[in-house]
Length: 448
Image 1: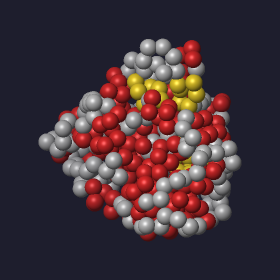
Image 2 (image 1 turned 180 degrees about the horizontal axis):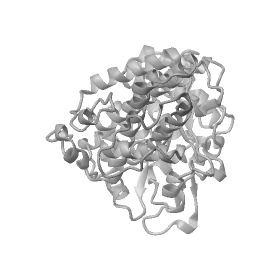
Image 3 (image 1 turned 120 degrees about the horizontal axis):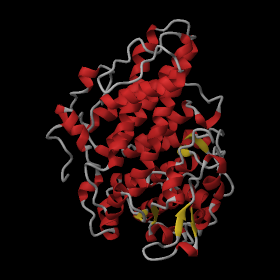
Image 4 (image 1 turned 135 degrees about the vertical axis):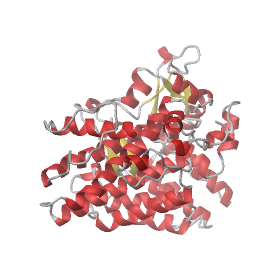
């Protein structure tokens, strides 16, 4: 994990332009005494924390949508060809990037948690908030990491000797640490962010807990936290679904990572639009054009001039450039809370009535001008939830995680690709990490 430490130092060098911050060299570099010595350093380190997490979010979209049945490869990059053909390898560059994003976020968070207690001149409220932000984003990074890679190293220090030889911790241990981080953050974050959905608040943690408990199959808790968000009155569904596609920071956004014209990397826009390196699969095109999906077909667009050979002419439209006003990546939004509550209620047998799963699905189906939900039996309602998540959250990084956690991956994906194998229910540990970290040797995920 040495390279992630170097990257963080380089980031802070750019942010601070301080003469006493050394340029990184290709050796182990300690971050001690370089930054976060005074109260004036805290805002810059906070920027570094959010930037580290922000850089990871495109990896979540790639994992959630590219591993599943939402895309087909249309370009020349080997890494995306592996996702398109379902022949993922441990040397895939995007696998390495995601792993790096998890531990870069971890490192910055741990740096703050270690150093902040010794910094004087910071107000009590500012100290509590920054500590809570570090804990929450560390927890969320580990949440994504453990559901992507399975057992992962649980990194709680910036000590390099420790981190260069650290074994994988069991999934349950990592998830317990995630819950501890969420719980601590919930206690100390403000009820609402004064700067909107770009920064953390208790509402964001509640949304994360709703998703956490859904994945854990704790249906009562998932329903409870989703209801807190829905009933808070702080967020409202936008009337027209096309706003979700075309506008940053809508009224239903709980947390999203934002980009400006100056710092927009246009990563997803480049993949989906300018290069069209991947395009919507025929399956998602059919799904989004269905009467159930309704106006959510706005997620994609058709151009007959691009329809040739393997190209079906469809393009993902959810990510533009910053100047187009829809470059952001949504982490949590209100519609997901309705879907979490619908699934949790269906799993508890609460199907009909104002407090039933069908009522929650109907809210989203009505917004999208789709046909009414006709499912009646519990199994059918759960399949309706699965489809609704497919339509509503397409290209927001959910599909693969949903299929795996519900045990539906093998059935859906084997029908999608003849190359699908159950090993793809986890990504491989990057080969470079196994070579670098002696404690990881011999512990690759099965089948890789």
